[in-house]
Image (tube, rainbow, N blue to C red; front, side, top):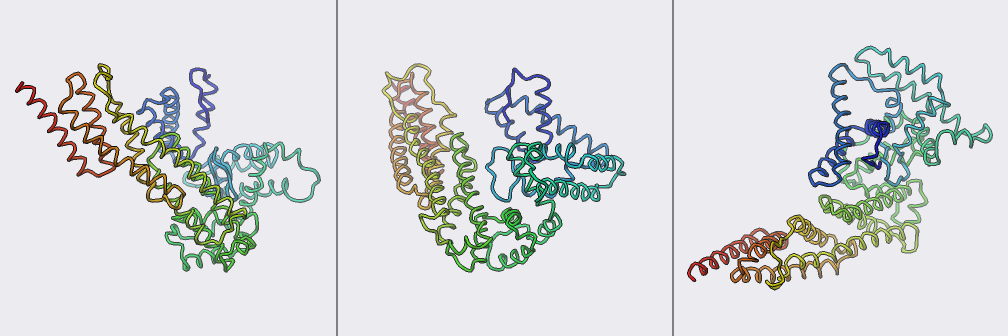
Length: 471
């Protein structure tokens, strides 16, 4: 959602508040943390302040409401409870087994306007009369049945041309989700049962766990082409390594040959795994572009393990659709990483380059923020070494890391020498360069070597001061 401050009317602010209020509590908390960090960094302060103000109002109101009386979910929340495992936020490319959260509101509005207005009003009135402590479970079942029936009436076979009626629900992506929502609500009991049968965590998806998951999935209504991706999505969410969902498809095909795997209904698991890897690669590109390296190691490991898993556990052909997609993902990752890796030596040289004293202007400083960003990039190159081979960046990573080690080592030793003879006009700048070099040494060689260089720099400064006093 784009927020334009300065021109926002009261109506726009109310729309923003309504949008934020409909987000789940976890998303609200995540947004609050992100905008608080933005304020700390001094980025987009007007936007961050506005959004934080609205979020805090919403959170305070929720806390007051919860303290005042037991909170009953509104009717739309009760309706959409079975969909929670499948909802994705706006801006994320959707795959099979997922539903856009942004489609919920227009479909709810259609249900109350055209789909089943009388029944919705009746159940809504009953909800408002519920005694304190009643969680509305019976009414949840009622509204889910009503919605499933109304959606089936609109999307099911027969009844002639329904294009105009469908257009009243919303744009094509909302209509696409309407079919999915109707399908999930139609088998909500089977979905609830599967949720109970599946382990909370599937850390090592081996034979015994595959067998138990296969048994849990052995329900006819969950194995239709429309519902199987949703059932598999529930399994993926419990996997420590989501790419391992392909093992289910391999087991069902009794073969790792991609043609035989693709010929089974469970071949869709491979398509889903490839889609998720592609999305993870896109997130990696975005994090690199924005200079966010906090989750880089975790994402690189997930991508490395996923790419290697698909390449080793499936017999993929280079010219097949799956083979081409995996090759494209590897190339995408490689290009994003290589571009950033190639930029690191230049950034290090700009900071540590020893200019002649006459070329250093009075008051020159080394930007501490740039030093930390560069240290993070050096650490990024070091992390890439662990996954370089599988992600097709082996040569550039090893070469760059070796060059960085040699250059930083030479520059640090030269800076120690320059501190001994530095003119007092540039001494502060040389000291800042030395501090940056020591920071880079921490990343490249470890704390012991960095401490050694720090002592050498202090000794050089002490010696220089003694020499000046002696003179």
